Image (cartoon, rainbow, N blue to C red; front, side, top):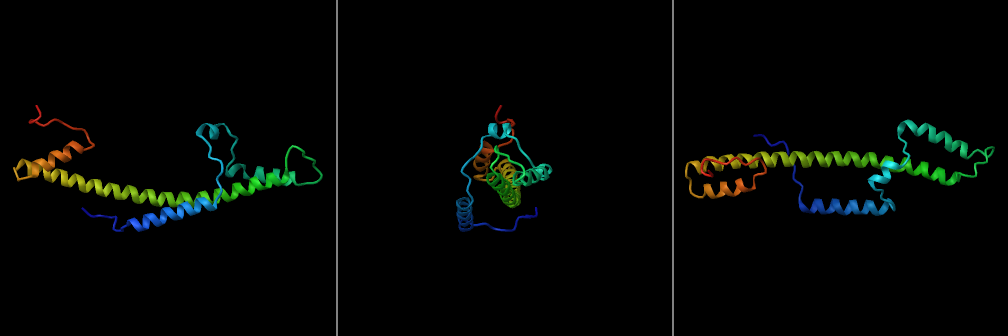
Length: 154
């Protein structure tokens, strides 16, 4: 079985990355964290609505239009924040995809190798190799798959 994941990430690298993530979080203000219900009920816009919002912002700063309900500076700040946070979001999503991919690959390879060990111990146990039955039974009790009772269990 060929192992595709040939990198090694040690505890110092993980600790340093976590420190940098905490540093990033201290740089970028996120004073409000929305609940799923709040997000669901809020008006939202994405790339398709961007031109609409930009044009509305232009209208809000036009002195010919007295829009007392809208603070043009606050509006401009909201649009700027949206642009900046979404730019960061894109980078973070790329990082998340990279990290998630490596976690999935590492987990898959580790699980595949654990299954090989499990099956090997099962065969060794059937051949009455000393210690194999105990090791196999211990792994069998921890095996996350469906447990099928063997003839010995009946």
